[in-house]
Length: 593
Image (cartoon, rainbow, N blue to C red):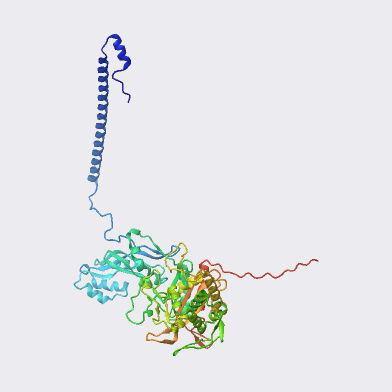
């Protein structure tokens, strides 16, 4: 805004020249300025009054229109827009490494009765017994005609069962909405997933709580509302898991075994791609814990993690690897293999003597207990224990399962010279197949011990170094020779360069000593041995097969063929391209006519 001066110099000089009073000019300009200010204030006030008036008009029109609408509408009771006592936060799904569902939630209904509201209790009891065969019609009728006012019939039911109950038409049979945990693949990966049960519940709500396996270990995370139902992704491959379980089940039955387990692990990331224990169960209908007998008689027992066994000659590669690492031997070092080795009243023998002396390579290929014991004597008890500590054989497996944390390896408290020798070939110390898989992964990957995991990883692990890359490379070559020249000849799978070691150990009696006719047979393998990617542990509990007129119980006859078939089946599923050794092109001679 331009302000006009009250005493403009030009007019003042002009007025003085004419003899007029200059103050009159100032008074006149001051009056004009005040009048302009009053005009602007009046216009601003009038504008505000107009806006306020329009706002009042709009408000009254809106209120009037709403009142008119409500007056002309049909009266109705108000309804809550949100669910009442429903599930507030959905439990997160569990997925395999490719995003396929392993565990999810399903909406279902509970069934309960108000006997005092029932019209035909006897008829309702008979019809319910037809729909649910596990129910007893007589007991139901007795409850329905008693003095009780509430009775649980079913916590969950299928849609077909709900419709059948609805068709009974009795007003005393009522339904409550709820969710249940669903495992769409049935018994596949049952021991890993574990299972759930209902915690706090009423007729329209049930809290789902993990009771075993991954469901228990990650229960808080799966139930946490802050995660918004975010799924938990595992390292498992559902396709590989299904194929492995199918072959393992067939092998267990073919070899007349009591049970079986298998673990497939990525040697660079520590991821468990597949892990199975047989017999298994369906987590959709999880059986009850046994109250008597041996734990491994129950299908709930996980032999891969909870099973603690003397695994036999699969330990020999650890003894030889440590001796190589310490510089005590080389693959060609000759070792005295004359026997037996006597220690007090105990004797160490070989099932098949291999002569007065043999190289370290031959000791592993022929699986000589005497030769391995001699090497262990060179190492000594203290250094042997230190190495086994590095391999994790004295602590529970760190895998993400609560069952693993409660399962600790077993060993001789008095670690004598005899213990040093027997442990060198897998007797006198009991570990789980998962411990063995972790240690064989270290042998295969260049000497680093990785933490086994059931969660999908995005990068390889570093791990603690337990042996040099040079020692690891020699050990892999020796394992390959066991398959091509030694006790695991049935383990050869063309194109996959399998290397591994067999182990057969008599089972321990609960009262002490060993069974003569019951063994734990194991094959620990690595493939492809030229560029190791996976380790596979297969164990059969009390296997035997009748060949050449006698029962064969050793791993070379029982477990190795099963492991070979597993590798043959899962190799393509893992994306492993079979390696074909290029053949030499025949010499061509050119001749001119």
